[in-house]
Image (cartoon, rainbow, N blue to C red; front, side, top):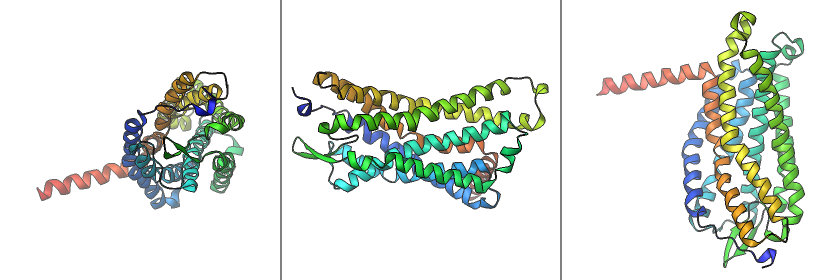
Length: 315
């Protein structure tokens, strides 16, 4: 069977993807909106970390808003009625959110690393909010530049007499997509991931020292840093690492013409099973904000107490 005539049987997508995307939409929309609202209300006391968190929440919210189209698409047996441009744009949104989240989490990790491992650094202290906003602008520029080729490769096509929206590229463009797909994985995932690992290794050495061996300022940040490490590792373990591993394997397999159709289909299924979980970072990122921002936890607890007391009073 020729490479282009290999048609995958992916009925599992009609159940798995609408369910996971619906959960992400129902949870991610209010959670990210609350994070943005909370940061906006306290904008006079913004820290460098909350600026990165704000940009992270904006990226997540923009992506979550595109999910209803994908939920409809997969619940209708992979039927895409929304046109070619919308297909390309939705795929662009997915990868922009994915790699934007990775880079902003990298920025947050580096920020925390400098605070823990170099608390007395004058270079770090002199870089204020203006510098942080500039870094965010550079991140957005890099993410958009990295993901723009998605508009070229992602497209609609016809399978089984139905219009579909290809995620990576149409089958006949597999060979030309391969260099871009691998480059995106290296620059958009592997390099940031190695940077985060380096930061966390250095932070762990400091955080594992006895309290009397470290300064008071660092000791105050210890619990907050540990929570951040745990949650970011969780985000990578659930969302980013499985997706990029299976995507890379699938790209390699589908770029080899001699590979049998059934083998390509097997790798495609494994990859597409991890793809919806890559969107779970839109739910996990607000949890990172909640557990690393004490002021936000306290205001949320205060609000819940007010609602609870009002409920009891009305009853």
